[in-house]
Image (cartoon, rainbow, N blue to C red):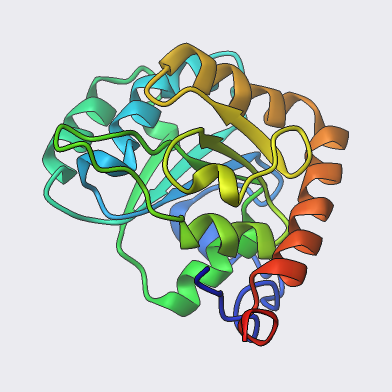
Amino acid sequence: YQGYDDRLFGQEPTLGDQRDALQIPRDAPLILALGRMIEVKGLHVLVAAADLILASRPQAHLVIAGDGPMRPEIQRLVDQAQARARIHLTGAPPRAAVARLFAQADRFVNPGITDAGGRAEGLGITTIEAMASGLACVGSAVGGIPETITDNVTGLLIPPGDVQTLADAVGRLVDEPETRRQMGQAARTIARERFTWPVLA
């Protein structure tokens, strides 16, 4: 396995600066996805599910951090969404800002798919970093993602590319704060026990 930097992730205080920069209230539910904007990352699937997630949750915001060749398509989908004012595309932030985003989010989504060339996410280091930051995670049961997320323990696994199931799973982590808290605690513990570089070494 690849490890995460435990000197950075899971250590950042929750200051709220990333929320402030995006004009997201500090008490608003914040759903975070992060990755290069390419097909295999499935970020277009998440944007397709955004209205299903956000329409009945008027306080929630979705942040997608990253950049890449699918940025124009993802921006087009955002522009078509009814809840577009609460969908934020940040570009690709530096690593320290990523760590602060994780610290200020409430839940993480890795909506990876198998792309047209048959490729899938190898492991998903961003998912591990999110777990280390104490976030409950929703991820697709494809590639190496199920090796990071334990279904119904550290998060929820869903079929890849299933817009409705993705929306239902993310919505559950918005609507059930105690479930989210328990999964986030378990995620932090498992990240520290399995995915730090000293443990792997």
